[in-house]
Length: 533
Image (cartoon, rainbow, N blue to C red; front, side):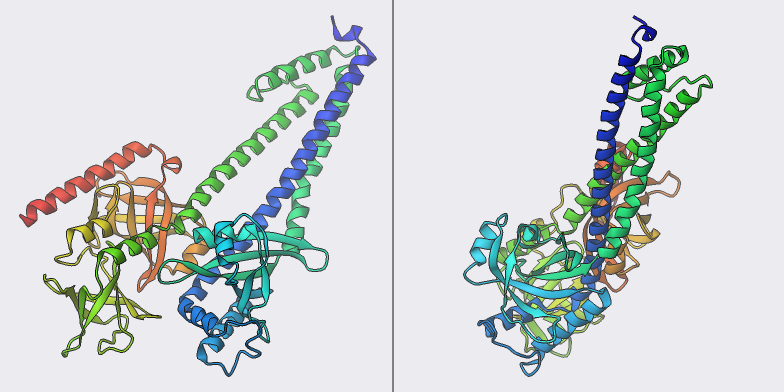
């Protein structure tokens, strides 16, 4: 049966089909664009605030915060930020400064009420009214231990030790992004969260306005197609019969086939529309792949393996197992806090003759025996139990006579690794914002690497979590490119010390490139073993 014998009924059916499908498509596009705009604004603001908070964390003592909470355990115990010691004043002023720099509408710390602490941790998916209490805030006067609600969107900050956020909209206060950052004590436990609130009303409105533009274009295309539906069904126009058949052929191919237009204006429009929609699909797929990689990186930055290693070392190594010699008969027994290929962390009592500053050198060794070695202090932190000193082990110097069970725990990694001298390999880290950064590779395995990057942790976090490592093992061979996940980021004298993991889904020809690195590491270890023998 030909189109000409169907007449007007076919036109009505085509118009109805195009109208319904077009309306549904436009509605779906409008919802998707609006949701995408909202997610982009909220995620960008949360990343901005989180990057700024990395700077605040370095000067915010969690141990002091816990001592304040223990000292003043009743609601409304304080009426002023002043006159109650330096801890309270310094923490309040730090939050005020941070709120001003970050243009935040609320900055405060929240801690579980004693009666609700277990319920919050055991039931993180349930909303609990008044389960939290405000401790320190950037307000003119304290609202000490004022009740605050626990909401399920906070749960990653409490249970997983990583930032969490949500969008809150109201007629009176507009659109606000609430971000929660975990405050972790020296045992790796989240004892409180830092709540940061920022106003995104204007940014969200602008993004939603921009998101409506593709919808307007889709409406125009829909009107064109709707009119085309009538034209295609006109019995007098046999060219439109061919257009309808062509459209059916392209739809049946899933949009992969091209429209053969032969100069026909309507078919040219259909081909242009097919190309535009294909581009939109590619854009959405690319965005999804990037979002997946970013989610993996954000999760990896807050990996709990370091905290787990510290707990295991605390159970394995007795107190006072090491000695720190600062010269001039100033020696002190020290507790092992952490040990990895990159650093050694020791704790000494608060009142001791050993008083070191970053950049100073001390001799460190095991009490049980073995050679004491010179190590440089890279960081000093005051804790509740004394002073913690971080000693850099960037060149793989290690610590002689480390017990085998301690070494197995501290230096564990799935693949063989090798520590590197300063110029053994060359590399660049290409971040999503900020271009290529020259880096120094301190250790390398088939699964990842340790790097020193010449920018601070805050700047690195602001550059985004997606990155590519360009690695050249041998000058005469082609470079290797790996998509990478940032496993850890910490400050050091040269900028940032970064641990990365090679990311298989984001790396072309991953298995062959990984095999080349593994072989290079094995050969290098074999050469070093032969030289030592």
